[in-house]
Image (cartoon, rainbow, N blue to C red; front, side, top):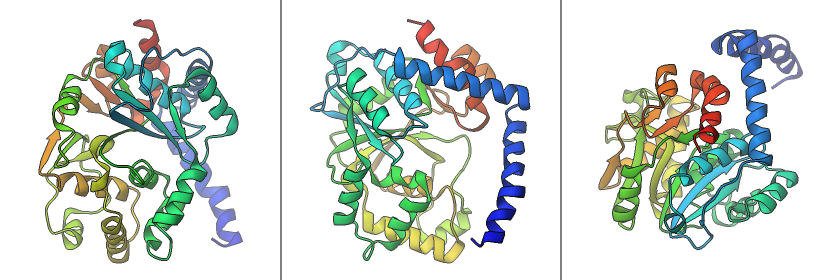
Length: 322
């Protein structure tokens, strides 16, 4: 971008986007209250939250997060919300892995080591060295470009690179409200089968490209409106050459889209012979105010407008209910 272009963005588009965000969350007063509530959540997570669980690095079932300084409090609360429903013995079957997105600072890592020593932290430099060795830019130019320019794309790569077997990915901005029986049943009874996968549904079709555009690149129609906030599959299913091909084809034909990571995740999940699609009424993406107040369902994924209730209300309910 030219100097003039950056100036125009800074003076016009950035303030305009900020005003649109403030309006989306109910105006200036409501927006500031949401920010203040998030700071309270962050302070509690980093200083007072206690996760009572026996997960360990040798746990059979891998739970993977991508996190950084701006999201660590959310990642910790998501972890807490799941394990508060599991017994000591149940939790021993799990490992919890926090992959740095590149912004996880030394102070945050020290907090994790001191207060949450059972959590395995994978350093950003370690991941990038693996990408350099296994996915070099010369062979995977599109994949490397997306890692640099689209933070969400790291979800596709980081947690599966150099891994084998079943892995579950979880977005940080989620909370479990009950013991996730359907997920646990699938995990205990199906996850050893490489042909099986687990996913949750989005509130609408959010793939960035139209169905006609998708079919011009991927000839098999995508059946489900998959949300990539929670899914399980064998890491070997993440075919990086296929991902490189898909990104190249979509971007050369139809341009770049923010939701390309979710689209590619959906394509890969639907190549599984046995895909378990969780109930939309239990694993809820974008919960309504009423659903949040009633604590409806098993899981809430707080995207878009629901974030204000996540920060103002939902995390507090997690610690009040114990």
